[in-house]
Length: 247
Figure: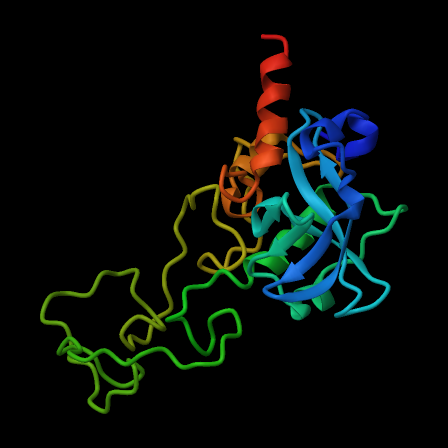
C-alpha cells in the first residue's frame, strides 16, 4: 500500500475544505506559528495518514511527516495545531523530500521517534531516556532489598525451593537460567538472550521493506486515527470515500 499526495490522488479533495488547498494551512504549536503544511499524504484507500510539514520557525529547510492523529485542524482559521510534537522531534525525524521513498522502513523510523515520547510520566531514568527517577514505593513489600528501589536490607531467602530456571539476576541466585529446549518462536533479541530478532506478527505488518497494509495504521490509533473533534473535514472526506467504495 503506497502513500500519495492528496491533490494527485483526488483532485476534487478541496470540496471538503471549502474549496481551499491544504497547502495554504499554517502550522501552530499552541499560540506560536512554527511553519506551514506542504501536503497531505493518503494511502491507497484514500485515508489520510500524514501531513508533510515545514517547521521553518524551528529548523529551517527541513520537511518531515507528521502523523494525522497528532494534529487538530481548525478549518475556520486554516490552521493545523500540533499535539505532542516538538523541535526535538523535528531534529530526530528523517527528512522528507520529493525524492524520499516513504516505504515501510521509513515509516518504522518515524514511529520510533514519535513513540519515544509516549512513555507514562512516572517512568524515569533508564526508561526511554526520561530524566526523573522513578518514584520510591511508600510501602515496599518486605522482600524488597538491595537493588530494589535502593532499600538497604538484603532480600530474604525464599523458604520454598527455588525453581530450577532461576539464575543470575533472579533474587541473586548464582546459576545462570537454563535455556528452554523449545523456546517460543516470538523469542528474540532481549528475550533470554536468544539471538534471532523477534518474529513479526502474522497479522497486520508486512515484512517486505517497500510494502505496508492498512492494518499497520489500525495498530497505531494514537498516530493515525481520525476523530470528529480534531479532524472534522478529513473525517467527512474519509467517510464519503468509504461510502463510494464498491462493496
